[in-house]
Length: 181
Image (cartoon, rainbow, N blue to C red; front, side):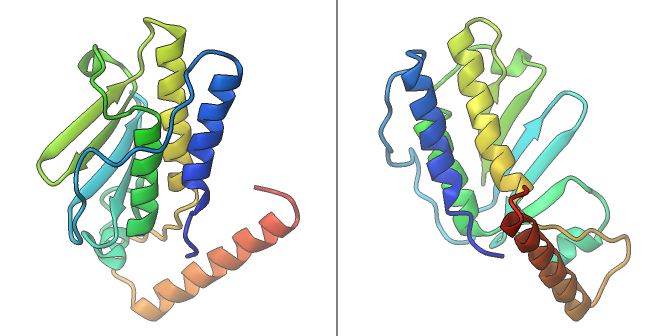
């Protein structure tokens, strides 16, 4: 799968759109508030209250093992670079700054890196907080929706798995060339 280099651009575009309407100040790209190391266990999830979408980094979990277990059909394994770009986008959107009421929110974004956890809940106290949360969701959904997955209930051999990934990539490329999503 090609790298999702546009994740950070999407976050910065969202920030720019907020700035153009005067609802949020312009933000610059900041260093992450923590150091990432190869092999870190990174899990990002979006909980809507009725379902949960989850991304895990590829250096932590094997794609074939994750997809053949059949235990979580909403789990996707993303390339480490894509997860890092997600974190950069969230950082640009102030995801890591403390926010009140995260535990009480019905919908939330959760990030776990090894033993540390951050939660950003959908806040209904101000329009700016709701817009910030929705922008973070858009960045998450961009990575999640552009991460291929191939779930099966039984263990599959690697060649079948890779053949299906190639087929899905080609299908996505054809849709993109035709102007579709």
